[in-house]
Figure (spheres, rainbow, N blue to C red):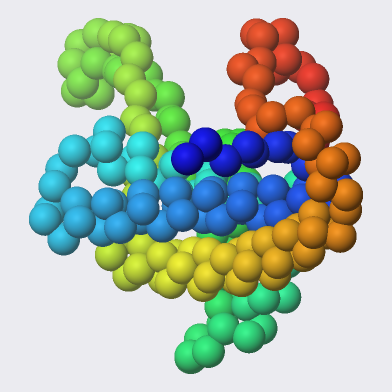
Length: 206
């Protein structure tokens, strides 16, 4: 039996579906990172490099699902339908601010570097500057409660993205079924193009 012939389509329904697939993938990555981070915290693992990497990865992937860009984005309004106690919208904004003002940009006090001068003993006969010292503090990860709360939000957002994927999958198929099959065969085969290095400065076309 011959292999299926897969073509690429770029009509609006397909673009909408692509956006929600991308959001679902980002939120799934955030969920997986948080689950791994929780395992480290429960195991009392002291690998700060791994913990901070998972922490940063989760927040970046989570936060970019709510930012403007070429694709669709999640709206904060979805948290108004999240069941349970507490204020999920306020929690979401806390995590998004953490991503924007601590991870993406170091503008809040969760990262500090202080500089000091080392002086000789004040009781010594010669008072002078002996050297320099620095003291730094940086948030490596939330505690278990903080990670579990973000995970709950991320799981809820992933489910919301999946529902949108299902809606737009159906619309994309129906749009294709309403077109001439012969015309569809004239479309290029489904493929991805590996970008050149200079593409880092260019906007995505679709």
